[in-house]
Length: 499
Ligand SMILES: Cc1cc2nc3c(=O)[nH]c(=O)nc-3n(C[C@H](O)[C@H](O)[C@H](O)COP(=O)(O)OP(=O)(O)OC[C@H]3O[C@@H](n4cnc5c(N)ncnc54)[C@H](O)[C@@H]3O)c2cc1C
Picture (spheres, rainbow, N blue to C red):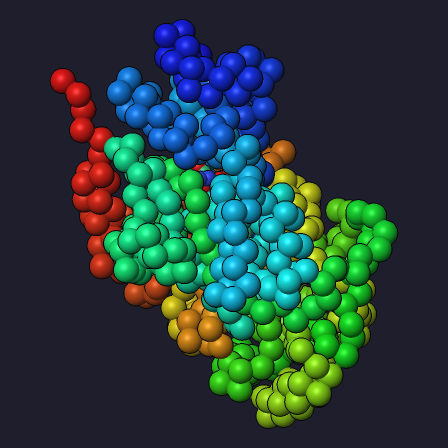
């Protein structure tokens, strides 16, 4: 369904004729069902490509005035943006400027179209870095920072929302709000003031998936980068290597006899503040990321090696500024591993990381490989709480998962869950990932029923493990009735209708 001609004309007046289209062959590209989905979804009625905050604001005001639905998008890699007939997509790819890299106060100011592959190398050259979620190099940094943002390096860092600084936001009513220090013309360095402290409105645990205004600029906090200024990459996809200096970058993988020992090793490494990444990683996911075809995946998976070595394994990535620091971290790590009866896993699994630490930990460029087994991919839980609580949650996973495995609706990988501690173990995230085949007739009975059964176990046990998001109101009572607050906030920001 296209948009009315008069509205199209007014949008064209805002962005210019080059930056708007309702051509069928253009709209078709925006109708894909998202990674893992099948068929086509209802698409937008027009695409506009604004070039500035002022143009975004003018579009939002116009859409409000004429009751047209709109949403911002960048690379559409997300699973959360469903087009609706007749809506307008604001594709923000033109707004792709890195506006400032402040090396002294350690922040970068970016527009929505800036992608990881653009920002990360600029920062590495300067010895700086930021937490990069496993979303692939082509995804928007800003979109990830305001939507989800869990990543593999949270142990030595945190979730990305903790790195979100001052923000420029075109609110749902079309007014521009400068959040944090920016609101008082004090620069970009702080999300909480001087100026309005509304970071939690833009991004709490989760974001709004484009349903609450449009963020046009953000500042993100930066960490130190302990690697080379330029990544030492060789070869071409899918067979390339990134060999980091081995005296300062190492990956170890240890198996533990029980989940409790694994948990305690994780906690002790946090207490000792060693390791850039420390995580219980999903074993089937790892296998799909480190193999180059579905056939190769099944060769490794069906050999039983992963099931034997990795159900209760801890990945440890040590990245240090000097060889001496590496020796210190290694000594502490081995003490902890021995105390918890850990053992190195089969060397063939660990060895892959000598050739490529990048794909797992730095800019997860192989991510789409998880979709190649059967195309279907369902992540459940995705919430967070203490490390110990996350292990309790993991212990109850069989209660809802086994029925899907027994019916052969998902791959037989009962331990394909990850727990990633944050801020050296002060908090942790859990995710269970299930692969399924979208060519099977019962595939629509996988994702939603899995999520529902998972949420039911959380409610039954009082677990804080699912993502508190508007589409999941049943878990509201577990999280201060967040769903009622979401409704109230939406109402408060609703555009005032002109009579
Ligand atoms: C296989 C797979 C694995 C994934 N793994 C992870 C993971 O480990 N960690 C993680 O954090 N995420 C993960 N994701 C989800 C990921 O966060 C998003 O896909 C990614 O950040 C989206 O970036 P994008 O550039 O594609 O944004 P888009 O898909 O274009 O947009 C993302 C969402 O943000 C909204 N949005 C975009 N720009 C703006 C703006 N300027 N203002 C307001 N709203 C806006 C959109 O409407 C949409 O709802 C995964 C996704 C897939 C498919």
